[in-house]
Structure formats: structure tokens, C-alpha cells
Image (cartoon, rainbow over the protein chains, first blue to last red):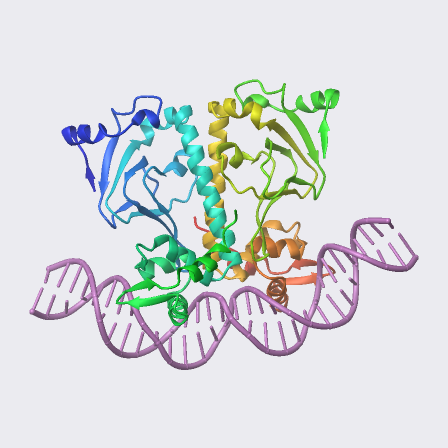
Length: 223
Length: 223
DNA sequence: CTCAAAATAGGAGATATCTCATATTATTTC
DNA sequence: GAAATAATATGAGATATCTCCTATTTTGAG
């Protein structure tokens, strides 16, 4: 992890419209942190000292259960907050947050800014929107996981993450994200290949029948 | 559904500390709605005209999937909001909300109060806390449903909802809530009876081995 | 370059959960 | 209070998903 200082900080900050996020000046005690791929931004179970706002990059939220299973709860993208749960609640089980690409964040020390943040309308309004979207998204994932087998959820995931007709996610990550065993994921991917929805190309999968996948994915949406 | 008027409204309002919720006066255009058990407070797919705040009672959030499966996403209790998603987002798939007991709500017409609500620090701070708790709760339910079989989740549910050692929830509701089939719920309840964790008493179940259930429930918590 | 670790791959058998069908018993409604 | 509706109950067979095992290939660290 690197903290931007002096000139580097100043240069970077010039690109950011802080006034869109906060209605009070934050420059002074605010830091800019850069995390490398696979760095832990927050460790599971350890309260963070900062409220983060992701400027660039992508991260993953993980939780470890007592039976050893690990679930990738969700991805975090730019323009999202990290540590907001701890800002709002004194008691909270902190999830682990890991950078999945190079990730650059604003980092506001909580001890210093907490009070002012909780009185800042602009910040609170943005946070509310973010949190409501997060709650909605989790509710959707929850009900979908109960109502549909992997076949449908995987089809949707493939369409969402494929790039120019090629699906190339790591199986291990996908298992954690969709909450199924590695073995089962392979079964269903093989089914897709047998039905010629996909075709294996080395480690990757080429989408052959977009519409078949789309049909499977479509039934899980609520619109 | 009944709307409290005049004297009834005034009398009821006397008990409420509106200043804890909003920092601007809301009495004027605010209504008080009373819903009977099983009334729909919001119909699935139809945008509500009000932001509600539950004063008394309990309600259920439902979603219907395209394959016909219905999930009871969550319960709503007093001091919680209804319709806040629609307040914050112009595009949102509205879930159905049904009163499960007599439920009394503050009802603020959105068209009238929206703007002021979104500028009210006190309201936004409360809403943020509510939403963050909601997001956390949904995330927990999601990961638990992926990581543990019904046995564990049901044990927790029984302990949470039983009253003086007696479990008496409707099977149908529990199926929707825990996202399993009726048939499977009965299987697992029967297992609990065979292992003598529970004993059937008419329609209800008497808890016989609190500690066995507790052991099953405990492993799903993250603390 | 080499070795360890991570990722991919698939077999075999178990089990968690589902669907469908059918009865019986409460509860509600007119 | 009879008929319709909702809730409870259980069997039988299917399937979605898991665990455990083993082997090969790729990647990363030194």
C-alpha cells in the first residue's frame, strides 16, 4: 500500500471534484491510498480507521464462515464507499476487503471526520443512495440464489462478465461469488459446452449461443 | 385501510416524537394510515405515493419471480421505513409489502416532501443507519443461505421466533422466508422431532433440546 | 530454471432439496 | 353449517449440489 504525499497528492487531487461528495473542506486530513492487486484494504474482523471512497479500481468483499466456507459477497467499484458500515455503527462485524485490481481511494480518518460526515447533507444523501442500491442488490442476489439453480445464475454471470464473446473468469472466484462448489461449477459449464452454448478455448470459453444464455439469464430478472 | 383524521390524528400524534425523525415540520401534509392484517401496504410493481414510517406493527416484503416462486425477503418492524427505495431512486422494481399484524404508519406524500426530505440531515442520517443495517442483514442472509443447509438456518429461525419454548410459525411463511420447499421444511422438522430436539404438540412444536438447536444455529453467526 | 502453490479437470458416491401427487384437517366465507 | 379455501402431512422419484479423491497443467517465488 502506498500513500500519496505532497506533490503527488496535490496533482492527483486536482482531478477530483470533492465538492460533489462533501460540503465541507476535507483536503487537509484526507489521504490518498493506492493498493495493489490482492492487497487487503480492510482485514476481516478488524475495524478500519478510515472511511474510503474508491476513485479507481475494483475490490471484493469477503466473509469467512465458521464452517470454513468463504463467500465473495460482492464487488466494489469506483465511486463506492468502503468502511461506511463502521462509520455508522459502533458494533459491526467487519468483512474483509481485497483489491482485485490496482485501487486508489480517498481515505478519511474516522476519528477526525466522523462527526462532520454525519452532519453533512451532501455526503449523507450520496451515502443513502449508495446504501439503498447495495441493499437492493443484496436482496436481489439473495432471492435469486433461493429461487434459481446455478444454471440461470451462471448464464447471467457469463453474460455480465464476458468480453467480446469470451468468458474468462477464474473458477475459484466464481464459486465463491455464486456460492457453489468448484465441482458443481464445472459440471454446469460442461453442460453449457455439451449443449453448445459455449465452446472451450484453452482456459477460456467462447460464447456460441448468446440467445440461449440470454433466455436462461432473463428469467431471473425482475423488471 | 383507514386514514386517521382530525381528533384521532391529533391524539395519536401526541405520542410521537416527530422531532427525532425530521428537523422540519411535517404535521400538515402528513397522514396516519392503519392497515389490517394481510392488507397490502404497497403492491408489487406499483410505485407508492408515500414514504412510510412504521409506528406500530409488522409487515412482510415479498417478491415474485418469473418462475412463480415467491420469496419473503424480510420482515419490517416498527421504527423502520417503507418506500425509501422509491424516494431515492427514480427507477426501481417495487416489492410487495403486506401487513402481518395491524400496522400503523406515518405516511408522507412523496410529491410534497421528497425535496425537503433529501435535504434534511436528521432524516438522512436515520435513513442511512436503517439502510446500512438492511444491507448488512441481506448480505448476511445471502451468504448464510449459500453456506449452510436448512438444518442450521431453521434452528436459528426457531430460536428467534419461538415464544416460551414453543415454535408456532406457519409452514408456508417459513418456506417463503427460508427459501425452501414445503416438503423439505417438513422433512427437516421431522428430523428435529426424531432427534428429540422438538416435540410436536398439536400444530406447534415444543423445544426439547435448546442446546442442540443452539449449537446448530451458532455456527452460522459471524461475530 | 526449479519447486511449490494455485488452478484446472473429472470420477464416484452421498445428501440436500425439489416436484408432483394425494389425503386429511382447519379456517373462512356466504 | 355447508362448501370453498388454506394449512398440514407424507410417499416416491428426480435433480441440484456437495464432499472427497486424484491427476494434470499453469503460475509464481527464489
